[in-house]
Image (cartoon, rainbow, N blue to C red; front, side, top):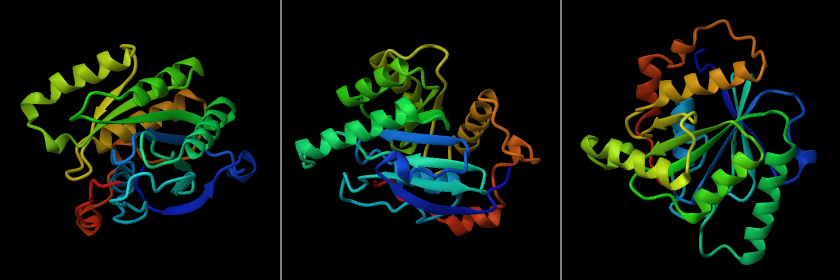
Length: 226
């Protein structure tokens, strides 16, 4: 599957605003400034489709991005930002829990963790929510380019132990700067869609997810700021 078309579709806050076309959805959760927008841009080979910002907590809805008219990436509001009011945090919590509990099209949740830091209490709570609702989950350890390669295994071990992650949960080492982990993450996404029994009518092989080198160059460097 090559990336042929990408588009922002809608910012939703209520179920009646969700798309109704029945396509499989891959959701992204993580702390503010963990790099979810940069990850989306790298996955889609687009520089500014998902707007990055130096101001944490800017995403306040469920942002839907459609890939090849076959798959949605759904960006959750970042959690853990101190300047967000208590009322806003409660609203975000209700919005996200409603989505996790009721959204039948959700086939995989990406829990995005900054590899440089131990998962926060909010990260652990999110993982426990996902286990409670039996949501298939993939842990994405982002910003891998920010630490030496020799420390990757140690940091990944800390992430898995702190979350209490099951051995069966896939973990993808990712860098939005270098593209590390992009193919592996797309493979994981396609496997989850297949496991859910959803046919996206794509004839290309999973290994063809990368667009041409010229498109990679056009994408340029993607900022890690959220």
